[in-house]
Image 1 (tube, rainbow, N blue to C red):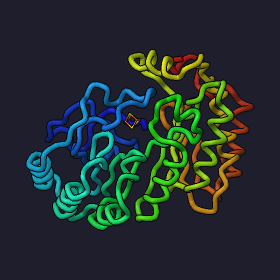
Image 2 (image 1 turned 30 degrees about the vertical axis):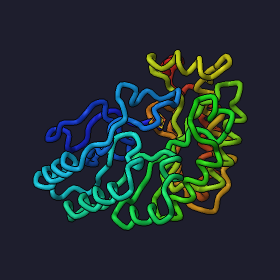
Image 3 (image 1 turned 90 degrees about the vertical axis):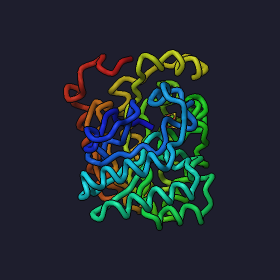
Image 4 (image 1 turned 45 degrees about the vertical axis):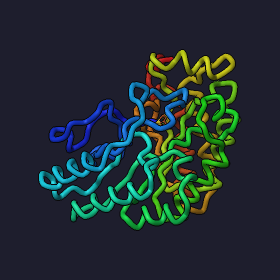
Length: 304
Ligand code: SF4
């Protein structure tokens, strides 16, 4: 999972426990931290919460922040529940929080949070339904890869079938599922396997949204990533990442609508569209970009 560091429209009025991350599409959302850190915190490519120990914030604190912001910004339309996997909370407690958010902001259109595959799989259908009925609308899930080999090498803590099952269960309960994948995660050696597995996974569950990022490792995490990978890691170039994207888009076969975005700051290019209608147009754009390397950012800007 990769998020954007930073605050929200509420950042001036509330005291956050930093670092604070949210998905790019939650830039204008109010953020309430209901958990701190990530209950797993072991993915070798992710340093988002390495400085924090996972903990769950008590009701009195969460409620008083919701009440404060309800007084200050009653017209809030979107709320994001942070940190890394708020869905890890006990269902009764999470229902209580979601209900209170819903009741406190009458114009609310959406409540969302990050979720790990295990967070979803550990909940029963009844629990997922209860949370959905309470008002939780959308789950952001870090898929990263659909290749079991790559998932193991980056210590994701989930297999492709677990991820597919989690997305399908989320969709089945009525959540909007937004998934992130990481181009270049298998390096040059496992590039084909990474993309083949990822396309198969997407085809098996058709998330509502798929965002493609490109692997970028902060210096603090690079050593651990390379060590855990278990073999020499050869990073893909921007041109190779674009070829991965071309193979991925070309291999996604779905009749369901998937809003696809590869326009994150980590990418060297900007590709977006909605499957299945825009697939051929996206492929045409990628082919054009591959034959015009001057439109890709200058070499060396990615940190590898
Ligand atoms: S589950 Fe998400 S937040 Fe936690 S370590 Fe893995 S990628 Fe980072």
